Length: 429
Image 1 (cartoon, rainbow, N blue to C red):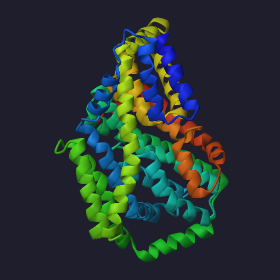
Image 2 (cartoon, one colour):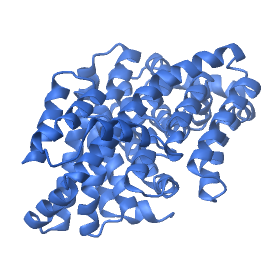
Image 3 (cartoon, rainbow, N blue to C red):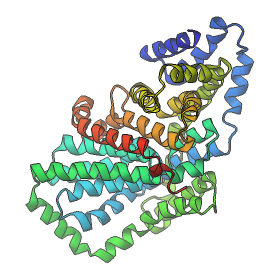
Image 4 (spheres, helix red, strand yellow):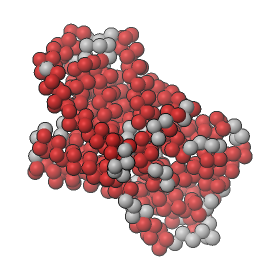
């Protein structure tokens, strides 16, 4: 009952529009009032706010954000798209599929859903609309495909999950490769059949293909070479054990600077400080949420919430499939109203005893959790990708959300495949 009251207070504060970090902090402060026997003093709260950020692994979060920001400013997305468009542009749904593939690659650079939507959408939406594609459909497609940014490694939610559960972040990164590819392929299949049925403006597409052909394949390959090499270096270093995820994040920042400033020359030296400031303005709120959510999670542990919830689910639901489906449904709902980072920090320690009890591998559950919450990027009322896509396309959030419904269904189908075929997540580890 007291655990339920705590969550009610938290969600009431969210509904009232209180910023999530303050909602979490104010909820924790109420614990001594609800349960005086729980030693949650102000000194406990402040001490854990600081100690929760004292983690080498967490350093990877702002570093991957910084490298993604540099790559976005450096025009990496356009070079990647031109490469895939060159080979796919004349095929059915070739350019929309090229956009999804670009989202996969850029997600392997930025580790962020909204950042992927911003970088790819700013370039692809105007281009594809000029080529005769429906703006609302393309915008919804990019908003949904942007969710691949948190599934394809390096993924910031994987780092948060690893820190909160003690699971290897490197293993999570490697485990995310096949699920990310599966989701991308499912989205491509849907897009292919959509345009197979509805058709495209072949004259405009042929003219665009001719423009790319005039550049020549070698020039396009050379221009995109350094962009394609980025995820290979990052993931290759982690997969071979040469570097840790945090060291890979450092390398990605240095690589992004070298490529954007010296090779592509798309970022000037006097642009670097503004990029640093933009990154700090994005990363600082995330780290504040991380610290407050960590205290919230520790408080729940002291209240024995994980054990209570685990016992409740396993006692009332004796079927493994039903238990995991209930957890997924809960995560899908939470993803609608809560950002991925606090959701993982609060809920991962709660659900981990449950999934351990029914024999689900923690790394496999990490995939299930991150993919479930990634769908929240395109589901109102939070839907961060929807808001980013809306600002780029000037379409209303509800218009994009309605067009995104088929993509969300495809995403959920991929989620269920990942859930019930654990080998997809665990094969490469």
